[in-house]
Every structure is written in C-alpha cells, then in structure tokens.
Length: 203
Image (cartoon, rainbow, N blue to C red; front, side, top):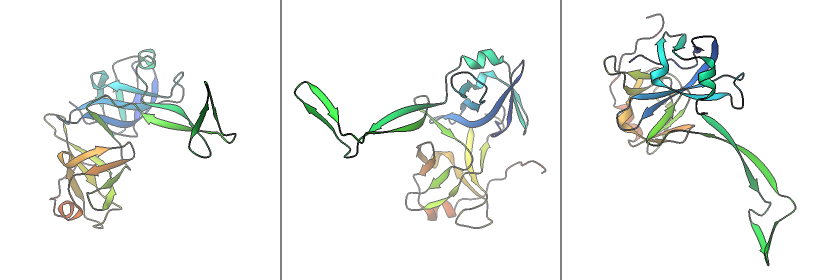
C-alpha cells in the first residue's frame, strides 16, 4: 500500500485526469479505500471516487492510475448537488387535496459528499474540533509504512500550540461532516499527545 498525496496531479493510463482532493478510509480499519479526484473536463460531474485498487503508483506530486479516463468517467461521483426548496416561513401549506407554498419560495443548491457507508473522507484544511474547543486544522495524514493504514492526523500550523507539531491518533476521531473533524478527546488531551515524525518533501 502506498501513501496517497492530496492536491496532486492524477494521471490515467491514457491521459491526465485532474487532481486528488480527498482520501476515503474505513472507520474501523483506517485503511484507505478510495481516492476522490476532481477534473472539470469529466462529463456530467467533475468528481469521481476511484477505488484504491486502481492506484498503480504515487509520488508526492502525482497519482498514477491503472485505468483509462473512460473507465474513470463511469465511476461513482464523489460530490453531488441537490436543490433544496425553501419558503419564507420555512413551511409548506395544504388545503383540500392541493398543496401550495408562499410566493417567496426560494431554492438553495447544496453540495453533498457521497461517502460509502462505514467510511469517512479527509482532506487538508479541515477544521479539527476537540470535545470542548476548536484546536486547529488538518495539514497532513500519517500512514503506517507497512500496512498503509492512516494512523494520525497531523496539525503543523494554525493551531492552539503555535509551532509545535501535533499528531492526533485517528482512533480519537468521532466523526466528520465533510468540513470539520470532531474528536472524542478534549483540548488538554490533544495538547498532551506526543509528536509523530513525518517524512516531508525536502527532508
């Protein structure tokens, strides 16, 4: 199993195919199951969920797939848009057998991540909230070099403890909502966590 870079170029077996945006992992085993990619040239929907078995190789700058662009086109989308109807009063009305809503009905477009059941999506920049306080944002994912499972979420900058790198065990993640990672531990427990070394570009 290989490390999966985010915001990296994606190369299909026959042509370029956008960039990687998220990794999807199993909540129980923490194994990476899919890579989410975005390519605005894909038909119908610019995002796709690529199974990890289709990742042939990776570098820090590129993910190379063992499938063609056409095969990627037929994979499941990662983000779908839904139109939500709203009313000025937040209510719909009915009379007799007919239903009607107030005249100032509006519509919102909501983007929703299509994460398989029992899995969760992670990407750099997601806010991390402990059980009692916001502690920072996700910068990197730390993987076990043998199993390929994600072991820690790394915060390097923009967190409560300044320049100290903070590595949060993935087992301490409660859930995510697509924009925020919620932890089962409080900020004091986060501060007390030991640092985990990370191999970075240029090291």
